[in-house]
Length: 237
Ligand code: UDP
Image 1 (cartoon, rainbow, N blue to C red):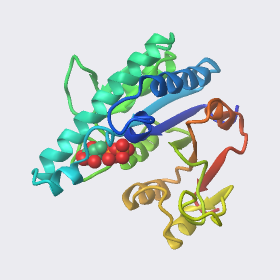
Image 2 (cartoon, protein in one colour; image 1 turned 135 degrees about the vertical axis):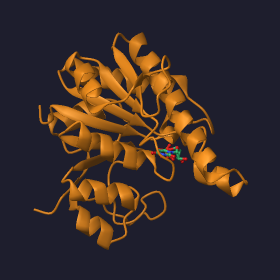
Image 3 (cartoon, rainbow, N blue to C red; image 1 turned 120 degrees about the vertical axis):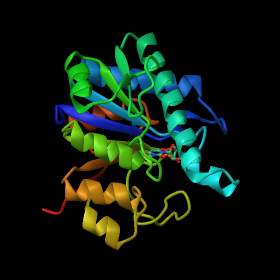
Image 4 (cartoon, rainbow, N blue to C red; image 1 turned 90 degrees about the vertical axis):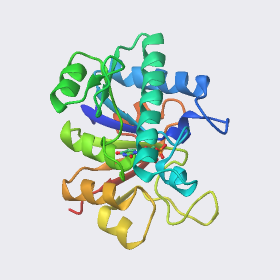
């Protein structure tokens, strides 16, 4: 096994599957099975989920909402998704805890690095919700921060495409995939892997990220085994 402890970032949008909004039950169940597979193999799993399938602060602000309140609504959306995933994990026999960066017991336990690590060591999946807990940030930044805090070996970014390309492969058929690329190169080429804050945090703290397609069943386990199923973004050597 290549990685012992991981932080998996799932976007809110990926949870909605073919629907335009909300949570697709089948997609959620498929993710739960993939996550259980690696937890069963002994990998310690931390998860951060986005909220874009329900609410985004920026789009709220565009409609006239106060930005901070809009971001708080977005953070609450991540809690809804986290509860849904924990329920799907329990349904397939995988124990999980939901930790919240903003205290809201008994919906979840308050987040701390040590509580997350304790849960993972007990074989439970630690789902860390509310992103960073502060407005003006994204869950990409939240997952970069949590990956660094919990001392994960790698941060995994499950997306709809199978890695980082020279251009958007959904728009440009000549786009080529990188097997690996450095943070500096990502920034220099202006590639949209994560937002700048998240990229800078990972680069400064030497946290590698792995971008791959989580919607292909078995990909998560393959990635953990060291198969080349995506793109590794690494701090320059
Ligand atoms: N959010 C926030 N602080 C954080 C993380 C998220 O305020 O640390 C809010 C923000 O409004 C964001 C929303 O929660 O738009 C949902 O998160 P995100 O857009 O990152 O979700 P994703 O795109 O991954 O589904």
